[in-house]
Image (tube, rainbow, N blue to C red; front, side):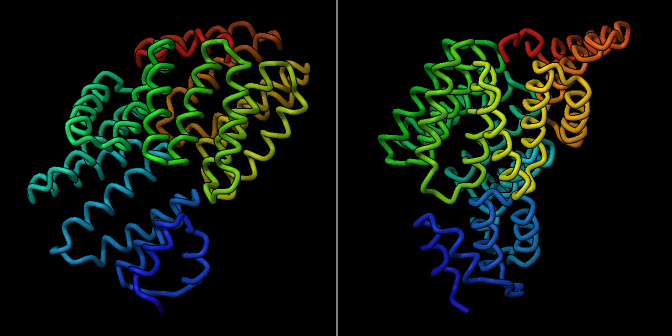
Length: 353
């Protein structure tokens, strides 16, 4: 079997599928091989499998390999966060930060701080997340780290979207895209474009949303980023749905469904089911809309995805109301609004969502 360095080069060349093909079903306790396998799985969006291998690598790594252990913990945090397990992600980020501080590794400590901020954002603790993100942004600016700045602006744009600060968020996503292009990072550019598309949709500029998701789709087309492709198809479906192009939208939801299912991303699959239910509702198929929406509720229920849970509850209230169940609809809607206000979210005002 080739050594880990060989596979690291393939990962740097953005060839995770080749890494997994060459590693095959090799059983090993070599933490370096487990690490590159996990990294390849993460790059392809197979987050559950990646988590398994990161944890195996952590069990087998030497205590003296501090930097590599921090890398492992941060990668683990990213996967947990993506799967809606923000509390687990925060725990891993804190462990990484503690190790980095003890070893006086400033760059790693900043990365851990960044990941901790993203976990807080995922938990709905937006103000706390913003403070940490701005701290990391200042560091990247001092260091002239273009890629890092791009990522932070992308993260800040997401917070602005959740807060309803659309003009600010649009500027942040545009900064993220500009910086990603300067860093010649096509994947980061694609995610920045997705961010811009998403906030445009929430702000009511649906045509701009569709245009940007179509651009993102082109950027992801020749990559092995399954998650990126799924995310783009779901977003594009949302935009087309809002334009009333239900047939086209459903086709993209079906693609997103298959891709998210292939990488076991159940949380984002919840958004697909929620979108499909909205089409069914507008087509007057309330029975199927309710069935699909209850699937979304189940998918969101096992995660920390608060916005997804709220959107589902609000949609459920609407369907129950349409079915004549007024008291049940009121109860569900009132609880959702109260929770949204408690979480400092305005999901109940997303009438164009």
